[in-house]
Amino acid sequence: MNAMYLERKAGPEALIWGELPQPRPQAGEVLVRVRATGVTPTEFQWFPTFNTRNGEPRPFPIVPGHELSGVVAAVGPGVDDFKVGDAIYGLNDWFTNGALAEYVVAPATALAPMPGSLTPIEAAVVPISALTAWQALIGRGDVQPGQRVLIHGAAGGVGVFAAQLARWRGAHVIATASAGNLDFVRSLGADEVVDYCADRFENVARDVDFVFDSIGGETLERSWAGLRPGGTLVTIATRSAGAADPRVRDAFMLVEANGAQLRQVSHLLDTGELRVFVAGEYPLAAAPSAYERARQGRLRGKIALRVAA
Ligand SMILES: NC(=O)c1ccc[n+]([C@@H]2O[C@H](COP(=O)([O-])OP(=O)(O)OC[C@H]3O[C@@H](n4cnc5c(N)ncnc54)[C@H](OP(=O)(O)O)[C@@H]3O)[C@@H](O)[C@H]2O)c1
Image (cartoon, rainbow, N blue to C red; front, side, top):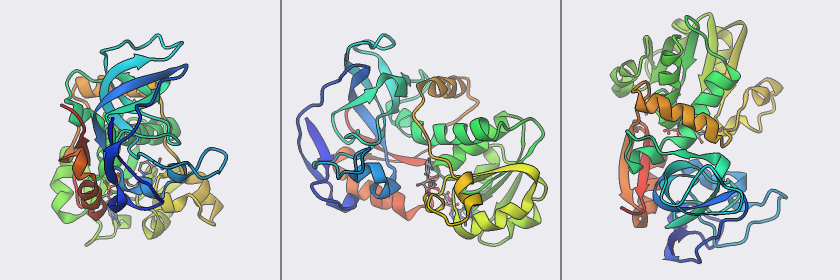
């Protein structure tokens, strides 16, 4: 099969186009013919990209890309939820080869039927971002109607889902974004918007029940003061993971694959409660340019790679 892969520990600029053996599904796994995959630039800094679960170096070649849409090509023993030909989307295991390839293997429990209202390109940018927002706002935060919710980075890949889920739960949504994205985040359901380059969010975000932070650092530090006693702060910023402050470490959350939650997300997508924003579409062979564009930021939503028609 054709794939974009790494032959050494490096960033997306080192991705190579070539032929790799097609993977085979084991028990509980699904072989997917990939149609599209989302572009997550920080993946090249993640531990599982270059290490096994035991902490050993992973063997090369390494194929990145852990969110995907596609068609079921084969199922391993014990898989009853999916059959050959089903259109699906979801995640594959962080520690295994990913979806910058014509075929990928994924656990059946990490997949869901592709929402009927979405194209494969749209579906491919949903799983990581929507599940992250779901697990933060609904899992950890259990956001309730009328609560005051602060969403940092609301125009970004995860932020667009966080803002929309907060609105769907009936919260009062305060969102931060740069000036050019303020109207955009209003259209996602934000009641109040703050241009983080020009204004201090602390002037607006007081007595907040739930803070969703995708930025970390100073933004995170300044957010604690606006939290009401008993309120919840969740940070997904990669740099919060190894923070010295135990309060920050406790607030850090790592997204997990969850096909059941993805089915709930699908329902909200199909009923129009959630909208998807594809920030750009590139062919698989142009993956290095797509990652570089994503790394530069200032996007609305997330970039997708087109793997097959
Ligand atoms: N822990 C996890 O499970 C998990 C899961 C997914 C992602 N992540 C991480 O979460 C982060 C965000 O991911 P993403 O895909 O949403 O990234 P993204 O698409 O690049 O979005 C980042 C957003 O942050 C905004 N921003 C930048 N500086 C800001 C500031 N000081 N205050 C407020 N907003 C600011 C940008 O807004 P403008 O464009 O308007 O400037 C941009 O929309 C990344 O570090 C990613 O690795 C973690």
